[in-house]
Image (cartoon, rainbow, N blue to C red; front, side):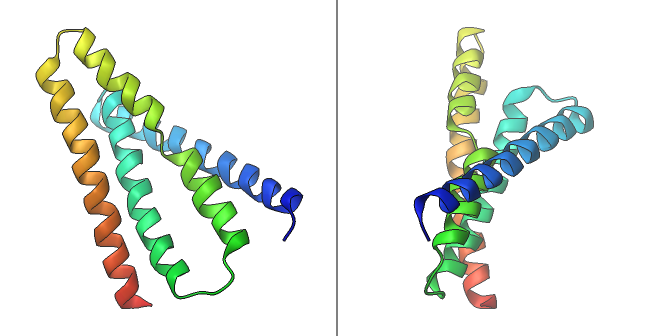
Length: 127
């Protein structure tokens, strides 16, 4: 597949991922009354779990360039957000909530890795 169609798949996936991030974020805020940092944590963990599933799926397929562009680069790139995570952690720290900032950073890293690894292992068994 050439660069233009792949680019269009990335754009399409990115739009879907960004909208999903927005909807999940709004849902977390409404459901829990929680501020933005916890919405970011939610999308990062969900995105990492989905990345684990995709990675397992791609490991048993041969030609995944178009799906890789659409799902991993586009959708999951639009869904998860390291920049928002970093700014959320910094904001907590600057507001004097150092302990919560550290918990938030650890939760993002540990839960995201656990989600990716667990989803990968489960998907590999199912595939």
